[in-house]
Amino acid sequence: MKIAYYIHHTTISAGGIFTYSIGVLRLLVNSPQIEKIIIITSNNVAESLTEFKDIKKIEIRTIDRKNFIVKLRMVVWFGFYLIVQLVQNLFVAKRFFDHLKNSISVINPYKKILSPEDFDLLHIPIQYSPIYKISVPIIITMHDLQEYHFPNYFSLRERLHRRINNKIAVQDSEHIIVSFEHVKNDIVKYFKTAPEKVSVCPPPFSDNWFLSKKEVSWDQTQKKYNIKKKFILYPAATWEHKNHPALLEAVKQIRDEGFDFELVCTGNKTEFYSTIEKRVGELNLSGVVFFLGIVPEEDLISLYKNSSLVVIPTLYEAGSGPLYEAMRYRVPVVCSNVTSLPETIGDSNFIFNPNDKTEIAAKIKAGLNDEKFRERNIQNSLNKMNEFQKIDYSNNFLNAYKKAIHNT
Image (cartoon, rainbow, N blue to C red; front, side, top):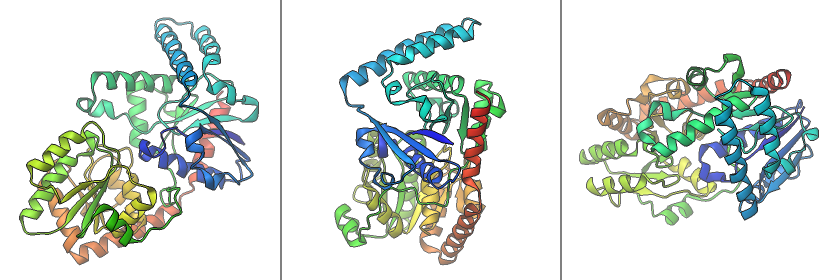
């Protein structure tokens, strides 16, 4: 089987989606049933894919997403495509509009580097594809439909953007991959999609998804970020649903009881960060809580390995990369009791209600100071990692690919 595989041009700023893309790519590289992989990406991302460049079955094709003409063509293509999509929803003549969409794709700059005779399908491991209606099946990985669960966390413009793009992705892809059953249920429910069009394909949870092979000492990391005490770690962009304010309240409560530690947060600083920053000041946590922004992978790995506890208080998550990473690095971890997280961690002793700051605080205190709790937590992670290693991840993806090809 020959596949084209798209990697989004924003790399690490895309958060867990980028690490997911790399994790699945490694899985495909190691599959004997995949004879060729054509990576479609931007120039800047290609520079970071050094581990894949010397693999015989891989070819990397790039597009300059910073080029003005490329940007213009993408905007024009999507504008026309959206108009046709809206009109198509009013009429029954689906085939005519599909032909029209196919014709419009000539404008799309990705059309030039996608030669369908070179591959059997195109896998887009993110929510939306940069191109549709080519002559081979397109498979989309949909990560979540969060806007249906927490609409208040999105502006009207963001909700409209997500709903339009999600509808196009569901309608104009030949098959959909999700990592968890709850996401499949959402797609079937909100888009009236046939269940057989959606395959649950867990990514390789037990594998390391980071690109970096560098090692940095804890002394270097500590000095670089001025970390002076034992600390808890929360690696997550500052989106509202990530629930940083509740974590701050819990930290305040514990410190008021006399416990001395720091909170280190990494990840993209979004617009909501200003609200979080203000709350840090109101709770007198300046100098105790550190938001480092996006850090190099080698620094993040060092932070994981040297943290006393990883805390994940999110209100919604399709699946939590930091949870798997903490378990993989054998660092005690506690998390919210939402979506797939309880199933992933597999033990109710290590989960909490993310809306209850006292419950969050109790789990943090146990994770910091109760040695038996910490030992049980690490042993639980080892057991779960052993379970994950027994899953035939690649077979799930291959079956989804075969369904897409067969149904075209």
